[in-house]
Length: 284
Image 1 (cartoon, rainbow, N blue to C red):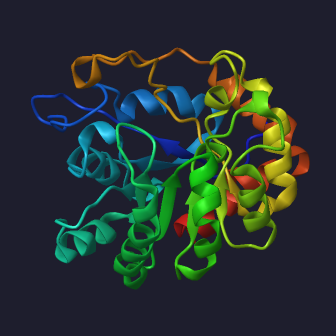
Image 2: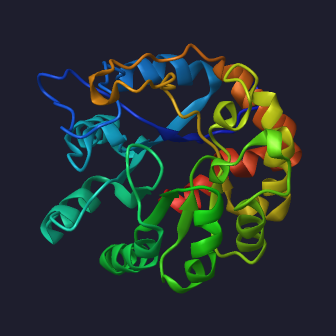
Image 3: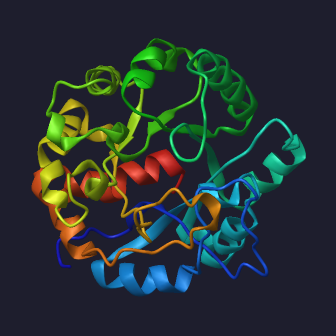
């Protein structure tokens, strides 16, 4: 793709390995099948995507081994966002930082039951642990929960990155729970936003262009605080089988996803694909 800038980054993808080597967590929403770094490269390199950010998937819980092995294999072209809990030793955080982990993800949607009253203290405690490492806090949250915590985001002392356009719904338009709060935080420079997951924001996974209105609003709020990702390998619909369900990956049109970004961002696309990720994830 000729309009992809040098060092363009896919800022959100997951990898899954052989379950014999990388067993999934006991408590999980699905059972993964292999989706490897090599498979991502086969998809991404023809699009001109040279850098990547690995995000720990919920199916592995706090066992970041599969992600860390992929991070080491990708060397300097990759960064990663881990998942931790209170039992994760500080020494483990330092070891992850040494190989390219730059943030921690809190997934407040998938496969979890969250007490909203506990979230502010969870955010503060997590931010306090990762601040000495220079890491950021990545949040997967939506709607009313974002409205509840928006006021404390600027006080956390670490950069905050919202996943997947704050998990809004394109069908609800620009006036919906959570969206106005993140637009305000963006305008004031208090957060970052991943304009990833267009297929989730849309009413149908094969119609990511439905997310254009939301993407344009987020980008207009602060184009210097926007990054983009494919969300590869695109976990398919989950049933009520819970962890026993073997996941299906959807064959989405990645060139189409990238084209939607260009339509939404216009002249800001190069910043979103290359310059902003370099700042956020620490590439010189």
